[in-house]
Every structure is written in structure tokens, then in C-alpha cells.
Image (cartoon, rainbow, N blue to C red; front, side):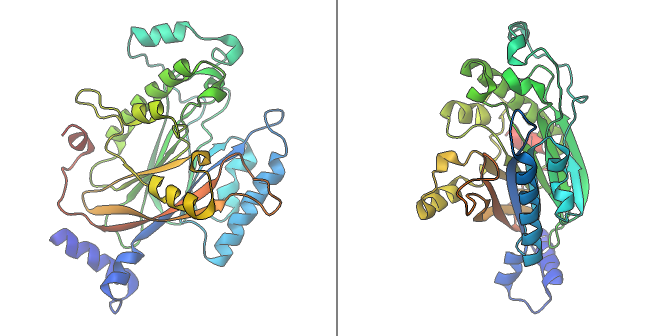
Length: 340
């Protein structure tokens, strides 16, 4: 009951004491855009300078119109002009993902060693990390602290091994909540585009999911609501979804997460004739001990241009989350939640 009163009081202070209860709840929200901006260089991609600039200009226009997302998470922001999108668009608080120097040497088993021994030079698996993760989180609200980690050096398959893929997390202080909201993003190993067999790509994918599991155990407690958005390379493949949320004895993978965007994407698909399978990226979420999180709205921010083309090979879309008092409280650390 104290938590309920505390959270409603904070919302009231933020809104003004005269606001009705329903409006108070609605204002404890956060909108999060996820967008793979295809920030690659020629000859891997052409025309990117102009496209990245248009992405930036559209975000600037959204901010001037008062409709820009509160938080943006970017993937494939490899080029400097891709990394600079958030800064140029006016976001005051920005953190960047791991670099090529951050990938640890970690091998879990003989199966991992066998996987490493089967590397293919011509598929980019022996050259090392040539570029960083391409991950960016930017927020209109202060970032209290952040964490990042590259996946283990050999937890990759095919051309994906050239990038230091990993995970980036920001704890964001949002008006109306007495606990920071954890927002994370990642870019998991591609499937066919990796250039190697699906079986090999899936092995790397599963290894990366294990790394994510360990990362969240270290950096997110049950106090914090979690929004996890990015390029998971899992939809619409049942095998990959199984890997992402599989049960492994007392370990739970990422099974503590709830789908944050799947139902909204399906609704939008029916309304706009959008093929849900072409929405490659996803949002997931976790309740906090002090706040329950609900995905309440979906908006495509970057889709088809008036010319018919797109500014990336991905759709950029945002989900608005609503936060309400969580009842009953859950245990005080994420490890306890996962091991229940």
C-alpha cells in the first residue's frame, strides 16, 4: 500500500494535484523507438549519407512538433553520421554500445571450442572485430547510469563476427516514477544474411542469448521495470524464438520478459495491411517490483517514404509504455525472479 500511495503521489506532483486519477496514471508513460538505421559504408550499402541525414531531419521535425519519442534505441549506427543522429536531433542524454576492444575471450564448453575450430576465413570469422556494436540509446530524460557488454569474442557466426555485437543498457529517470526505468537494446546474430549455415548461425545466436541472460542478472534488479527493444533477428522463426525464451534447468534464458510489441504489431498489420513478418525488430518488457508496465500504443515512425522507398531496410517504430503500481511485490533481485 505504501508503494501504491508513493507512486500515485509522485504522479500527482508531476501533473498537479487537481488532475483526475485516470489522467495521473496515463502520464506515467515512456515512448521508445527502436530503429536499425543501416549505418553502413559503401560498398556494403550505397546512398546512406543522404538517408541518415533524412532520418535525423525527421526526428528534429518530430521534436519541434512535440511528437518525438522519449527514448530512441538504434542499431547498426556504425558510421559517425549514424552515431550522431541522436545528438543532432537534440537528445540531451546519450550512451553508446561496446566497441571492438570490449569483446571478452570466454568459452563455455568443448562444444564452443568445436564451434570455434570450424571458423571460416572467407565468411569473416577469423578477422577479429573490425567495428563496434552500432548500438545507441538516447533519452530526453536523464540517464542515471548505464552498462554495456560485447558478446564473447567467438559468440558469432559469419559476417556478423566483424562487428562487436552486444548489449547496451540505460537506467532512465522518468518523472512520476520513484525508480529508474531500465531500457536496453541489442543486435543479435543474423540468420541467412550471416553467410553461413542456419545451424551455425543459430548456435551463435544461442550463445549470445546466454550472454544476455548473464548481463541482465548483473545489471537489472527486480526493482526496475525493463524495456528491451532492438534487432533480435528472431521473427518469424520459431526455432529462434524458442532459443530466446527457452528453459534450461534452473536457468530461464530471457523467459522473464513479456512481449511488448507483438500484439500491437498484429493489430497494426490488420489496420494498415503491413506484413507483420517484415517488422524485423521487437520490444520486450519486464515488470518492476514498484511498477507494472503495459505496452499501450504503437506507431510507425519510419516506414515507407512518399516516394515509396524506405530510409533503411528496417521499419522504425515506437511503443508507448504505461506504468502503474505493481501489486503484489516481487522478490528484490532478478536472480530470485529467474530462479523461481
